[in-house]
Image 1: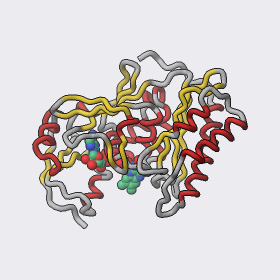
Image 2: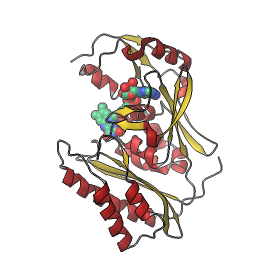
Image 3: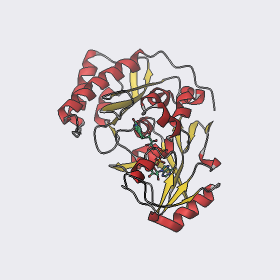
Image 4: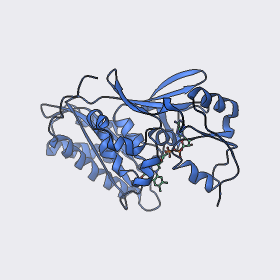
Length: 294
Ligand SMILES: Cc1cc2nc3c(=O)[nH]c(=O)nc-3n(C[C@H](O)[C@H](O)[C@H](O)COP(=O)(O)OP(=O)(O)OC[C@H]3O[C@@H](n4cnc5c(N)ncnc54)[C@H](O)[C@@H]3O)c2cc1C
């Protein structure tokens, strides 16, 4: 099928994007990498009157570090994140997760902001943003809002973003030498959306877990933190007993939804496998090189 007819605008400034969006409301769609939107147009799941192509807007591009945060412009592609030395140093969880996203051709075009705005429960970036206590920066003609990742994802493909808002960037606190990260997912084939995935972050001091974040993808209608399991790990060294208590907490806490290929029970089992792998990986990692002051 072909996409329905639509008008097309390619503004060169963010202010122009914001006023077009305010003017056309629900009749308009923002176009970033197009890796999701163009497919939905071709399948006629979406029939906007106007596409606002943001690719020529410089304010939405680039990676930078300032005030203790890594800032990822909304139009930064998955491949740019994968290749970035700045990301590897300050948010290594993203470097580890990036190769799991689709295939190279899609990673070359798909954007961080597009993935966060779309809010796919099986996507990698939303779970990583949750695990890293990230913040979404949204702009409209009325000003700027900073929305914690924890409050941003509100349901199946739904977010706290208002209809007249554009994600301009996301910010992530830079990793310190005490931080450890692990990302892993189980998919039917490499590049497929995950059946279940886990983005994990923790501080490890003298072998004891602190500030554990376990953010899951593919288990529900949106990316989810397993807070009760995190609490079980808080202040504990990794021992067989800790692992067992954490696994038991996860089995109680996580209530995966079945999908077309996996039952809820199979997903819960896979999540348990990923939890064990993540905890072993977090504990085994050498101290990260001390992050440079930004
Ligand atoms: C075959 C295939 C396999 C894929 N596999 C995976 C995978 O394994 N993991 C994964 O995470 N993703 C996967 N994707 C999706 C891909 O990562 C997309 O790039 C991503 O979901 C959307 O980013 P985009 O830049 O292409 O956004 P677009 O398609 O341009 O936009 C997506 C939606 O977000 C809105 N939007 C975009 N940018 C903004 C913004 N800055 N502010 C507000 N709203 C905005 C658009 O209006 C649209 O509604 C796959 C895609 C394909 C085609």
